[in-house]
Image (tube, rainbow, N blue to C red; front, side, top):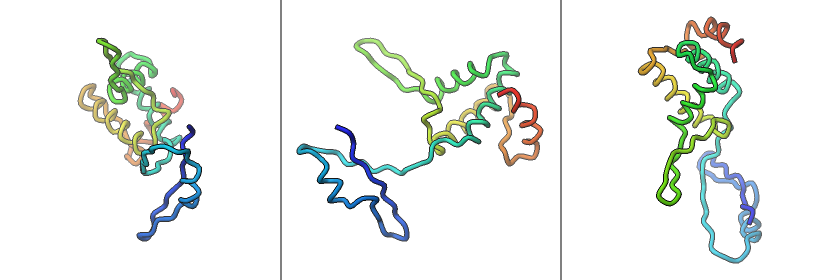
Length: 142
């Protein structure tokens, strides 16, 4: 069955629905259902993605890895989930393309902290004083 969904908006203490709730519920077949409400977030931004690849190019220059290897390593470190099949288990990393802006910010914060503590690399944020110089150096490498 295809999920039935609508957008809820809460503003000034009032909740409004994108579609009338009776219409949504009438579309359901007979059976038991679980209602899940989660905060909607935008997909990661183009600027977040560009920043990530500039940072990975910088890390790659320092470590001798490719920026793709840096990407894969950080996805494995911070975006993997455990999977068990029978008696075997392992971690499956996911990529960054399906992250929303909040999840991407959290991922970038972890990358920045790890690069500083484990590799001694300071990765600048866009609001930092020397970010434009960093951007000029690494934007051609992404």
